[in-house]
Length: 459
Image (tube, rainbow, N blue to C red):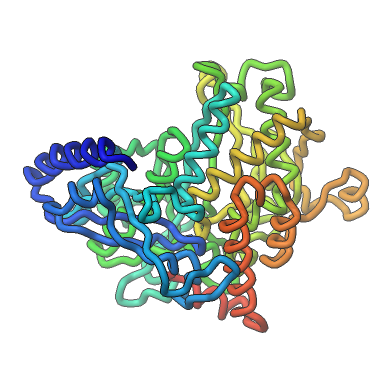
């Protein structure tokens, strides 16, 4: 961060600040997502935005070691109370918040006081993964789906308190039409392109999809979508829960990710000579992800509660398979309709959830896919049935393995994966495993209901 950079950043912040002043903005929330998947924040008055852009805002190193419940653990790379980092807002994502009048938002990157990127800055890691893909001559597009459950503010732990119709039913949409319209309106005013919104299967559950974009931008958008949903829900006397499992039993919220790889203007997932129109690039990229799904769960399903959701026959994808439009496969290949496949074809990762840090998800998927390219990976035969309905001996014959059923097994797979740990770097990879193991220890002996209750409102 040289002097010229600081001057340019300060000047740009002054320019944008003037526009925000005209819109009544007084404060700017800067956010980052920690290793437990919690969105953390510090805020500055708008008049301090230029200073924050040029010199950053102080933040402790200790945030890398927070659990979901704010317990602060120690780890190999912990510095305890010593030292300070700086939060630098990304001014290109600076957004006036429609659902929080007087406020604006920007995602932040973390640097040390010498102007060097913090080795555990997750957003910077996602940028590095995008750059590594670009070095190979490719770009990627991603989008995160957001699912959430609403309850009445007066009865937040009663999953039936805001329910008035069956899953996917118009009755649910009609009952909450003003609320859903307010969610979409707020997002559209924040320049987020909503593609669809609808009631989901579980009681009081909704799902929202947005347009695909650059992977880092997609992670930023995901953070903003969730906080907007949370704010609009409060305005309508509701609470929004994004947890993978609201109660000990039932269907939970996923955090599905859609991705495609592009060679210039050409989508590698369409128009090729491999299965279902994939190109060799798309197949190898997908194979890199499929082969590393056990390790990737430590990133994309990173909490004890994640494994309450990962059950067969729940459309979560718990076996190591892929398939064309197979919602029981963790990797679902989506072609889109005839005539739009060149734009629409993509890979959906279904086994992830919203306790994950989206920037780490971006980085992990891209690094895994790049490894698949380096290895010249090929995909096994696709599965066109629910793999959970196959007899165990048939699954064994086909080489279909169950993905990890608990967090510690996923962590062990992550620790053994040199591609992911090497790409993340020792400080971040080690700290992630420290965090995951500490959370697992915290819930030793806990029932499913106790786990669900403890994490119902954390993310």
